[in-house]
Structures are given as structure tokens and as C-alpha cells.
Length: 214
Image (cartoon, rainbow, N blue to C red; front, top):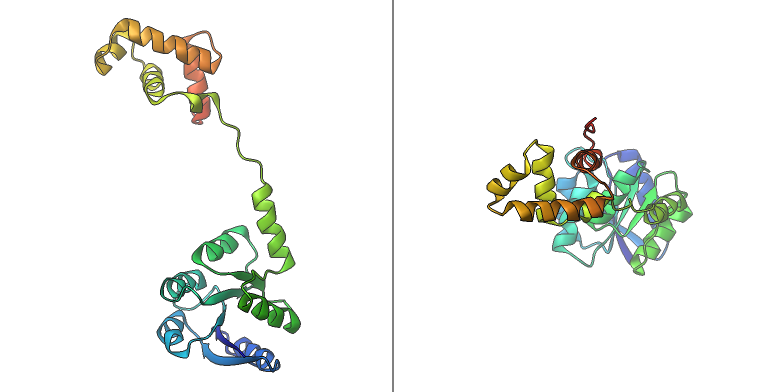
């Protein structure tokens, strides 16, 4: 028998979920909670194995409640049941410790399967949500810019040059020799594939979204 709890502030939907759960002879709805505070206070006593969690609760977010529950009861399985299908809500809930994410338009059969899968140790997700999760991992990583390859000291010198310091002033400010500053600048030019101070400064400003120097 899988013991299930429901955290949902909409009383009609909450009662509907209870009926769905109890229609399955292998499941029991051991508790219902209308708020996050109720859930946090009573779940350690009621000991459900699977929790169906709404995200938009009147006193807190379902993600915050999930994180609290998981910190106290790591073995509990929380399945988010919500109308929100955007990436921000999805990943916030999953980072909080939810094992599944199902949209409220799911059928009764899909909800029951999600509960069973969560109890088996799986990660139930509405197909639309699963596609978004997979797509996020397939997004190309931003290419490393040439400026990002600069060593910390090189970046420091280039920042000073961009702020109008002459080579001698850079040397004095950093307590290094003028020839060392010139050597660093040559290394910076090589890494940025430029020929002059102005070009190097422009590369720096482009990487940080500032206007280049004409």
C-alpha cells in the first residue's frame, strides 16, 4: 500500500485528487493539507511515502516546502502537480528535491502512474516537461571569449589601460617594472589577436557590453 499525501489549497481539486488516489486499491490518501505550514507540521506525523505538491500555496511556494521536507525526510518522494510549465518553475522545483513534475491537466491514470513511479524510485514527468528538461541539457554552451582566456594579472592590466592609465602609471600602481607591463601587453595582444592598445580595450569592452573606443 502506497501512502500518499496531497498539498493543495484548492479544496475541490484536493478532494478530487483524494478520490483518484483511493480509486486505486494499492494506494491510500493518508492526509490532505491546504497550506505549506500544515504540510511541514503534519507530514512527519502522518508519514506519507509520496507527496503530491502544488507549487502555488497561500503561505509559501511548493518548492520551499519540498526543500524543507527533503531536508528532514530525505526518503520522501515529492511529485509536483501544477499548472506552471515554464523552465524557471520546473528547475526550481527539481533543485528543491522534487522527484517528479506533472501538470494538472494530466489524466487520473497519469497521476496514479506518477505516484507509482515515484514510489518505485523513478522520476515521473509530463511528456511536455520531460522535453523541456532534455532541451535544457542540449542548449549549446556559450563560447569562451578571448578576453576570458586572460590570466588575472593580464586582465588587471588591461582594465587599467581601459581606464586611461599609461604604461608607466600601470607599472607604478602595480609595483612592477615598465618592461614587465610591456611584456604583459604583448601577451594580451597575442591572446586577443589584436595589434594595439585601442583594439585590446575594444575587445574588453565588447566582452563586458560596454561601448568600444573609436
